[in-house]
Length: 132
Image (cartoon, rainbow, N blue to C red; front, side, top):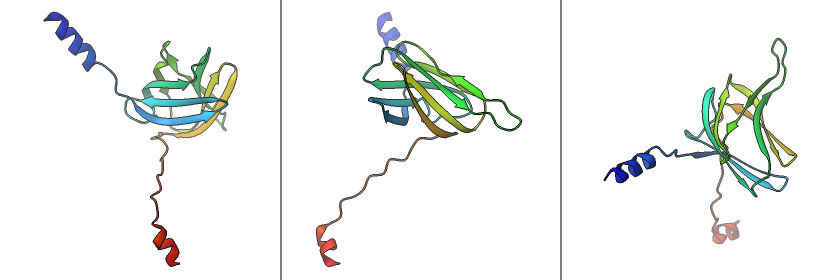
């Protein structure tokens, strides 16, 4: 009975992640997921899904220097399963920088970032096209 309660507790503590961003570049497909489906100011719980799995991986956010403000870097603190957190100190334009096996991938986003909209196009009936 005790084992059942422990198992139920562990299942209920599991994190449900939602995809925020997918980057395909330099032979890698990287999905960034968060618990609430967005990157925002303050702490964000994150998970990376990377294909193929790299030998080395590092991820961070970078905001270049601006007048009256120094450059900022926020490092993703990740475990060996690429799960962890990142603390974002302020909103604005940030580069997500991924370093995979010596390859550097950059993507500019605006925080708060709720993900990219993926459009699906419906099929148009050929009869309608023939009409014109």
